[in-house]
Length: 429
Image 1 (spheres, rainbow, N blue to C red):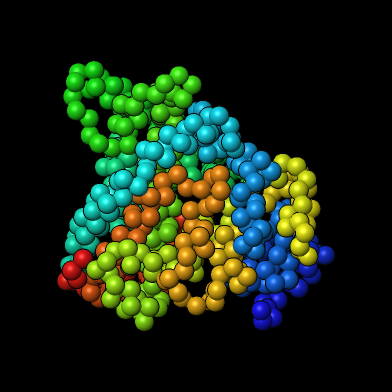
Image 2: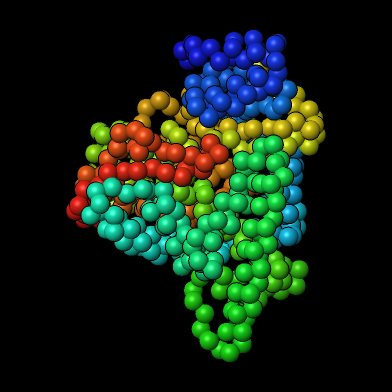
């Protein structure tokens, strides 16, 4: 492995000696603006990067160890915010509890691979309608007019949760997720807005659940969506879920999807548009969606939406034991596992700087790893890839000069604007 010359660690060490808070701010800024160089330097020089505020884990083996050891590295510190917003315990804020195992298994069944083909067809239709509407203008604001629009239509037609309307559902998701992922200082106004949005969302879902119960009693055939499946499924004894658990798990579906899926779509589309030769090869295989999908995942590796996954160390643990980098992580440490770094670890990922769409699936960590890996991975994969495919099939789709052609992010995380140029005709899908 060649020497890394980013110089971040020397700058950090100097800042730490003078002002620890300033050093912390430097690391946060580098993670936002120069993460590739920072992580490369850390992998080579300090793969387990200990700071006064947190520990960053950058090697593939160590990231998978953190994410696989839910009894040591938990999500316990992050569950209370979601619980407060939803008015009750949410399974994704729990680690291997009976409720977590029961409800995670139930939702995996509801979001299984059987729906992938139908969801892909739905997404293609919705994406083409949005792109057709934008084509006469020669441009599209891709975040809201395409990516977020597709996500909200999936919520409405596949999840069975359109909200009172798409705008309200979008507002609820942003308020709740902002508190969960971007409220680093615990700002009271952001927390309060999250709780208000959660109360509105769950109240709406209770009313919708009552209407669906009434329709079933009246013998009316429900639509085939996730909400109807949950309402119509009777489970025996200790694995049964009551109506309040259905409400909270339904609320969790858009919260885990409406921000992350458009984020992934935006990053993947930008990375492919930045590589004209790669894009030409991808379009040459676009008649076979599954072959095209490989290009989306490899593009996303170069700028994944979730670069860090936070965990809390519950007890002293020697990470990477038996290796030269073995480090004791004290109980109470805030740990940031970095899948974005792990996917560039040359010890595991061959020629990580090369764009290679034929990489094996286990080298991809976009949906997490271990106990808290994404429940909806099967529909999510086709939703992200098919939306990007339909966009890039458009003749004349292109990045525009700054500032329009740049992704604008809210809170440094969530995409809010990305304007792309469009041609007026559609390639055959």
